[in-house]
Length: 144
Image (tube, rainbow, N blue to C red):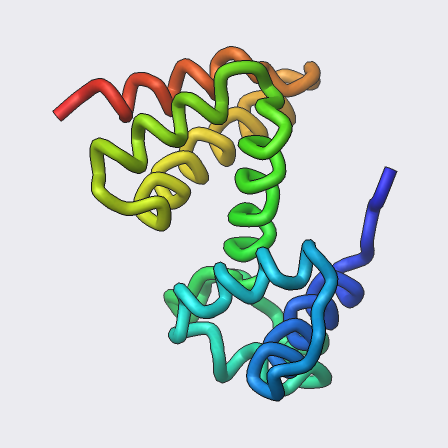
C-alpha cells in the first residue's frame, strides 16, 4: 500500500505542475493529477515553489483550503471511480456530473461526502463506511 508523507505528496503535485508546464512526459497518475491541477489555477502559485509548499502550514486560519489535500481528494475520487470501489461510486459520480453538468462540480460535492465519511469513521473509531459515502453522493445526484 502506498502511504506517502506530507512532503512527498506536496512534491509530487509540484513536480507534476512543473512537468505539465514544460510539456514533459508524465506517468498515468501524473497525467490525471495534471488535469485536476489545470482545473484549479488558484493553486498554481502554491505549486510553483516546492520548497515553499513543503514548509507552508495550511491550517485554514488564512481562509484558504489546503491545495494538496484538495488535489489528493480529486485523485482519490478518480481512482475510486476507475475501479468502482466502493461499489456504486462510479455510477453515483457520473450521475452527479451529468446532473451538475460538470465533473469538477461533481467531484467537489463527492469530496464533501468523502470528508464526512472519514470524519465519522475517525470520530467513531471504526472503518470508513463506503456505502454511506456512495449513498451521500447518490442523494446529491438525485436532488435538485
